[in-house]
Image 1 (cartoon, rainbow, N blue to C red):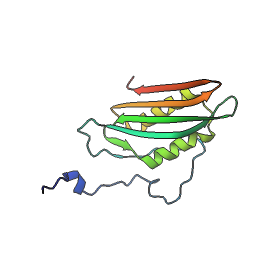
Image 2: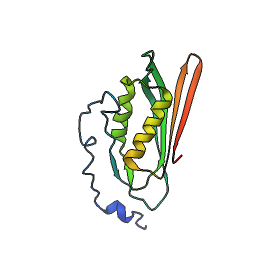
Image 3: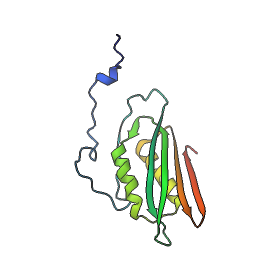
Image 4: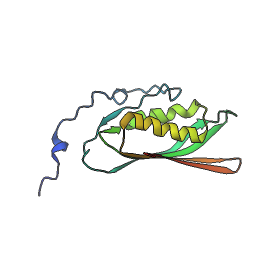
Length: 145
């Protein structure tokens, strides 16, 4: 049987910059301004491929009423040189739990912070928020525009 491992599978990877993944305990940031998105090197930068990250239990707070908002965030992107590290993304998304912002602002903020961190070739962030007052709000932000 032929060896199907690629050269990159056998080379040691360096992830020196991944500080959150190395921690046994997680400190949850109280706002997106405190959160830290981390990245690692894309092992296949020569190829366009979609990465999808799904957060079905997203929460934030209405900036006017202080009521909790519940949503489903989906992030899809084609990486260039960097990929987002999933534990840092989880902590970043958790940081919205006590953060007051409208759904449109939340969805666009997530896209802006992702783009600033990894500079993807393409990215789409979808926010699907549960009904409030009988209306469901769905937002899709894309990069590049």
